[in-house]
Length: 449
Image (cartoon, rainbow, N blue to C red; front, side, top):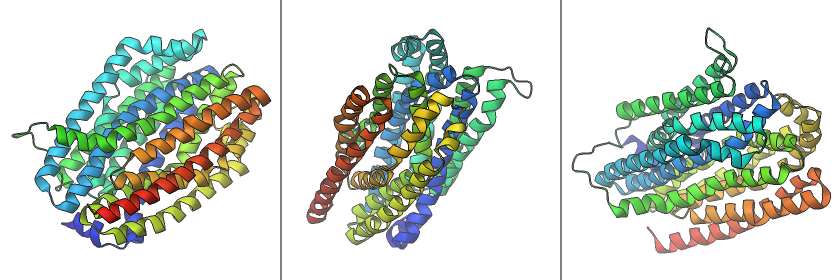
């Protein structure tokens, strides 16, 4: 098969470029439409921007659950392709679809019943609470498209078709960015819907992306076939998916909880600090998305070659991906240090947000190089069948160190010093990841498949 030949024989530097560039572009587009949402919503009011910043962690949790299941399926499919177990590939893909559909219904129910209660737990300001509730209800009740889109994208990525995966995501992101100003401000005959328009544009983009991803799999992905004939869900298949997927969900969900707790730390000092942190998180996600794209490309390459027992190619993945990730992170650091006022200006930042945000962006960005290595090592560990390493590393980074340090610095020295908490958090997490990843690699090489 073409995919097998590429994953097994294409030179690693070329293979990483071939697979990671479409993923990088896809993730940049995905992050860009979050930034565009923020830019247009900020033109409504700072309260509207604060409301979406408070809602953002819930949106990320939805994406986290969808991506967690999909990554578990992705890793298992790539390994099965390496082992040439084609019947198991179909069973795993169908199981993944059923699991992702069930997961999405949980959020539909929560949004329909508990949107007001969730918003009231995030803010006591009446206007921010109202705006947050409106935005959350739409994104949660009609957000099943993101679950479907993520799963079909991972089917494509598992077989090396990252360009097609990119196409589906770009379609959804482009639709969102085009519809944002139309629905928020009421252009081209559309009524002005404010923050609700931003939410509607988001879910329309997600559903368009899911439709395109489904069609691309149907017509171009011959390796992963979907068939419910004689299908029975098997506990062993579910266990294999969630062996990778569950820790990945927890890992990817931790930033959302971290942002929510950080917002609680910042809110007593200034709502502008909460608005800034929401802006920072979107900017950081955008500038560091290429690293996530490279990490996601590493996962199926490593899984496939783990399935074939080719550890020389796995070593080469480490050798080329880590320096590339560090270079990308240093570019992002340079941008944050050089033009923080310009970056914040995109979000109509006032003087208070600028006074907090300009030094904040510069301080936090010093840690990007450390974080880039952590990301690559985490995806590599997941490709070798152990996503617990990434989960524990993220736990250390964002809870054990970051939040306590942020709380102490904010209360002892003031809001401008809270951002230094990122320095020890990233360093300690990297040390753990490096030691744990090395031990994992030595163990799987010694024991084989």
